[in-house]
Each structure stands twice: as structure tokens, then as C-alpha cells.
Length: 601
Ligand code: ADP
Ligand code: MG
Ligand code: ZN
Image 1 (cartoon, rainbow, N blue to C red):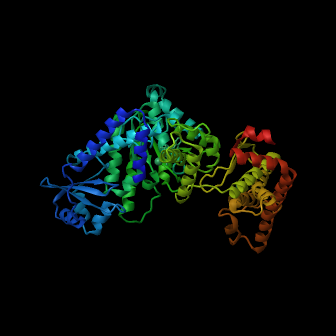
Image 2 (tube, rainbow, N blue to C red):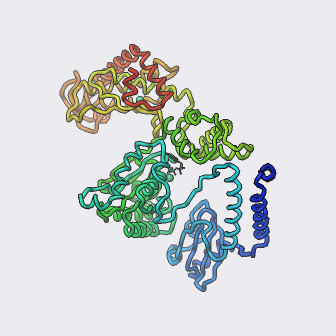
Image 3 (cartoon, rainbow, N blue to C red):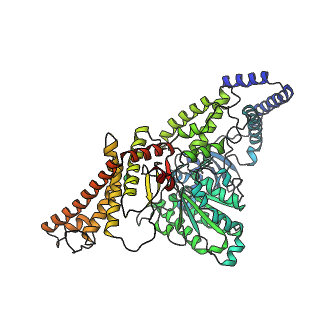
């Protein structure tokens, strides 16, 4: 603190334009004095157990909960108000139950979550003072960095038109692209209505935390110029029983009155996890909320102009009822950005900041594989802070390097994936192996895209797309697929010191395909007899299959896998240089398109 005061004083001395600063300093002194002599409006909080007793006695009509600070304002039936503090680690509801308040007593109380710092009569003055001081500090810092310090984290109020648009979203062009028709629909709702075109009710944005899902949802509304109604699944499970459902109901009611508009449900997995038949109150509450959500989504016509966007980082835990047609039937992946994407995101965030001339953002992008938009925004912000702290008037290369380090070490704890170099190399060889083998195998689907950017549990992936949709799969096509799957493991063997668990999924799929060939498609020497599901070894132990059958089938499956493995090995050995070339490109670029890949092979 002392140091920064000195810095500010130094700055004042250096600054030529003395008048403004004199005026500001005077203002600062006034504000500080006003703060010191402000009327004492702070009441002493009463004990939480006392509140519990009052609720049980039926004397409390309303509770306002400032969730983050844990401050509660209690209004009694005689109009008196008091404040109390609760533990923010668990919900208020739980704490009251713990203190022995019955659910029926609780249900008579009106419970409301308020944003911190809302203007209640008693804190208007102190709020005014804080705002004035913050304004002064903010202004000083703004002048100081010639750019702006923290990105203002504005909490959206319900039904506002967001001030962000697609130009604020960078590096995830494909996800953005997939949302453009929704923007068009919202902009020209009437046209769609005339044509009777159907829009999806619900669109699910799926991606790791910090990839920009919330930003994207707001940008859709901002781009279309329509109101944005937001809520979060985690809010539902925390509040009083029955409130989750009524929250959903009232949100949709407000939204429909303002259509066309966007309803955004963040962290939908918190409300829409798979339902269990047994369970306590918490789960029941979740069910009610989920049911209400389903009712709302089914209840309006697609032409009404309400589009529900939801975000989650896990689709697999969602209740299947949510993803059924007519509900969240469209999924949009929001991936981690590649090097070019990271560069674009950094560019968006340095827009209003002054950089030293030797700063190369591409270097920053290259040094941050695996990081997401939120991390990159954090890096730019951190670099700006470091610049101020060390008295630079522009952000230097050094500031950026330090910021990257800081965010990298910090984000290890946040479980953001930063790959180490060895792991990255292994993944690149693995994917290059797949791609080159697929490319060299007749009957294989053409390679569409290769990437070493992690997604969920996968280190990277090689995507193929069939040339045309076909109804039948030939024996050669299945074999080609198995050979392609083997390419990853083979490349690891031939190029890396050790083999990894990265091939686990490949081998599982390959085994399944081989089993299908042998046991259900009659495509092996073991004969034409097919076996019913359950498949695999379960079928082998079924009464109809004796030991001898087991051996024949097992051998046939093993043989297919072996032969495919040998073929993959032959290809990779023969095309060593090509694999090497593709790997180096992947390490550099992280994603290769079909054309880029073809140019290399
Ligand atoms: P998510 O909802 O996926 O967890 P957010 O949308 O909340 O991520 O991202 C947090 C912040 O990170 C955003 O407000 C923005 O400043 C920054 N950010 C994330 N992704 C991007 C992106 N693709 N382009 C620009 N900024 C981004
Ligand atoms: Mg979010
Ligand atoms: Zn693989």
C-alpha cells in the first residue's frame, strides 16, 4: 500500500498538468474526510440463532440475502429491520434447518437474493462515498495506464440489451458461425414467422469453463439487439424449496412479454442433472425446477421468438429429457482456442491498451497452449497491472511474460489444462499417425481436420468425414477404420520413448469393430453364425457358446486386430518423413485443416 501511494505521488510530481491533479487531490481529501465523518449507519449484526428463533415464532416477513457477503437484512412483521451475518459456505436454508427451524416456518418468509451494494435506505450514503472514492481511484488508474484497468465486470440486469457483440468474441469462429442464423431469426422474427420456419427452442453451448460461453450468449443478444434474460442453474438449487420452479416460471413470463429475446441458463447441469428416483429435498427441488423448465420449453411455439441458450461444461450428466427434440436439441461446441484463436482473443483484449512496440502477441499466444479466453483476458489484465506497478506507461514484453507465468501457475490450481512439452509432442505424433495412416489406406474416410488442442478427456483428435452418406459399410471400410485407429499407437511406438494411455479409446473402438465383424456381421473365417447382444465376452459366456466357440471367436477377433496393427505399422514406417512433417506442423499450428494436411502429404 505504502509503495503504491508513493508511486501515485511520484506520478503527480512528474505530471505536467498540475491543475487537474490538484483539483483531484482536493476532491480526494474531501471524500476521505466525508468518509471518516460519515453518519454511523452501520448497525450491529444480531446472532443468527436469534434470527432462527424469530422465524420459528413467525415474526419475520422478509429476508434479503446478499449472497456473496453473507449479509442478511431481516424485516419483522412490525416493520423493524435488522441485519445478521451468515456463513457463506453453505446456503441460508441449510443453516436455518441446522438451527432447528421447520420448513413450514421457513416457507412463510419471503426470501430474496439481492445484488451486493444495492441501494437500501440505510446504505445510500456509504455507497455514495464508496462510489466517489472508487471513481477517483478508477480515474487515476485510467489516466495512469492510458488505457483502462480492469475490464468492467458488469452484472446484467434482467431484460437488458447487452453491449457486447460478435466482434468482442474472438478465436471461436466456428461456434460463433453456428449462432448467426439465430441472430438473423431474432432480428427478423416477422420474416421467419411468415415463412413458418422453425427455429430450435433451445441451444446448448458446451465447453470447458472460461471458453466464452456466457460471452457468446450475451453477444447473440447484443448482435441482434434483443433483451437478455439470464439465470444460473446453481441459483435454483440454493434457494428455498419451490423457488427454483417459480423463478423459472417468472423468468419465462417476463421473457415472453419482451420477445424476441434470449433466455440464458448458465450452468444448466446444476439444475438438470439426471434424475434419481430416490433422494432428499435437494434433489426433489432440482426435479421441480427441471420439470418447470421442460414445461416452459414445450409451452411456447418456436415462432414466438424466445430462444433459450444454456451453457454447460458437461453434456453427459444432463437429464436426457433436456436434450430431446424440441428442447435443447442443438449442441454447439465451444472449444479451447488454437494458436490463431488465442492471438485473436489477445487482440480483442488489448484493444484499448498501450503496448510497447516490441510486444509480439503471437509470442504470447504461442506460450499459452491449452489456455482459454478467460485465462487470456486475465493475462492482459495482469500485464496491465504489472506495468502500472513497475511504472511503465506502456505494457512491455516483460510484463506479458510475468503475467503469463502468473496465470499459468495460478491456473494449474484452477485445473486449466496446460500441456507440458513432452505430452504435447506425444499427442502430435499420435494424431499425425492416425492421419497419415488413414490417408494411405484405401477405403478410409478422408481426413477432415487434425488438432492437438485438448477437449475434455481427449488430448487431441483426428476427424474424418465420409465422402457421401452410405447405408452399408463394406468389410474393407471397417478394416480401414481399424487400421486408422491403430495409427496413433503405432506412431507413439515408433517416435516416442514410451507408449501412453492416449490410445485407450482407439483400441476400445477398434476392438468393438472387430467384435462386430466376427460376431454380428459374419465377416471372418469363424463363420456366418451371429450372436445376439449382449455382445463381447458376455455373449461368449452365454450358455450357447461353449469353450470351443469362445476360442474360435476370440482368435478371429484377435487376428483382425493384429493384421490391422501390422498394416498401420507398415504404413507409418514407410512414411516416416511424412509423419514427422505433419507432427512439426501440428506442434506449430495446433490445428491442420484438410487442405493444409493434403499439402503436407
Ligand atoms: P464461460 O461462460 O465459458 O465460462 P465466459 O464467457 O464467462 O466463459 O468468459 C469469461 C471472460 O473471458 C469473458 O468475459 C471474456 O472477457 C473472456 N473471454 C472468454 N472467451 C473469450 C473469447 N472467445 N473472446 C474474447 N474474450 C473471451
Ligand atoms: Mg459462464
Ligand atoms: Zn487416437
